[in-house]
Image 1 (tube, rainbow, N blue to C red):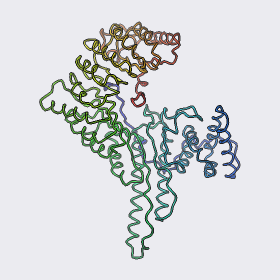
Image 2: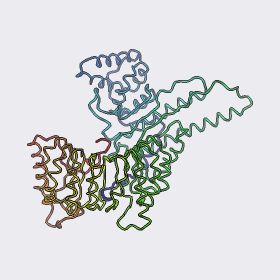
Image 3: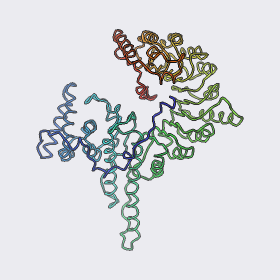
Image 4: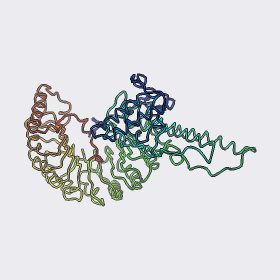
Length: 574
């Protein structure tokens, strides 16, 4: 995607502060708790009633499973009753109580559930997905910032309490239950007053790690002073195993948040709250800062590295790439907007390009590669030819590709394995059209996701490609936005592809016949993006497309001009 579509991660400072009071935060929803019929005050009776309802529901027919969730919503809505009864409830209730509290934004109840979590793992992906008790998949929705903050707060208070109990005794104290908090998989789409972006989650977790470290430092200094006292007691039994919780998380850092994340990662090895990165994304960082953070990441746990808008160039990539080879399970590497241009190579740049290719070949588990907006004309064979295993996702948007690049790709080991292909921004209306048609025919059996946005394709070019597109029987997504296609051309595309039963999303352009008379011809991508669209004409065309889908019994397919839907698709979800 070109620079003009980039959204800055700029976050207000009010969203990145330390959690207020670690447990004193109340949402307006929490203050206005619904007035439900009061259960008996005796906690044991309360627990028995809730437990009985749970087991009756579980043992009943499948249609009654929702009763478990309804009971859980009632329980988490009354914080005081939950606090009294939680010790008597079966631990099997915890997952459904957590989902109910998260969905209804019962933040105090969430914190309490985390404080007393009876299992070694608390996973957002497992707890917030669609389940037998609740059809709603909360993991696919924008996460509520107050709920996220209170879960983190619950883990911090849990750790602090555990550390305080162990500080006074080496031989006794409560057993640690929670060991892993898995926050991976949460959405990072859009902004809202109650949503929490990946950037904010990264900063909040980093500050939580630093807060825990400060507490540990205070206790360590006090313990050292007591040991130096002449009246100190003789050594007791061996110390208990160290207390710690690993937080598996996707991290997003830029120049604003670099300092706090680096401080948190530096103390990972001995801190009670430890960040374990799965997907790492960095924007607008210097080479030194990027390398510095990569050095602190776990070599085994990282599956994706996304470095964009960092202006690395070939010289910068030469420095960064050796630090990626330590990630033994790295499956996805994204290097868009890296300011690489191979069209006018000097002798020194030729060596750097060869070195770059050699380092790529050392990434044994690599399945996804994004080199978007790098000018790679004629160099695909050099860059991809030494890879040991086939790529399943290849993004080469705005790469100024030549016919020999696509000719190589169609005959390479990668094409029969491709699930995702992005050639947006390459001119497919000229000498690339036939090579691309051949490439598409080779990739057809496996292709799930095809992006050919802003490729200057008109109706005639699209008609040439339609037989190859229709052979992609497993295709789920097609992006043709930003191409000068007419309403007739779009209707023909819909008619031809309606038989692709797996196709669920098509991002199509505003038809050229819906623009004003001042549209230049042939129009550039900029002309199409900035031109004036007759909304009445477009509304009619849009309705006609929808009617065609309904007539073909394909109401399950979404045809839209909304690029926001495009951003939600991910290689790991294919």
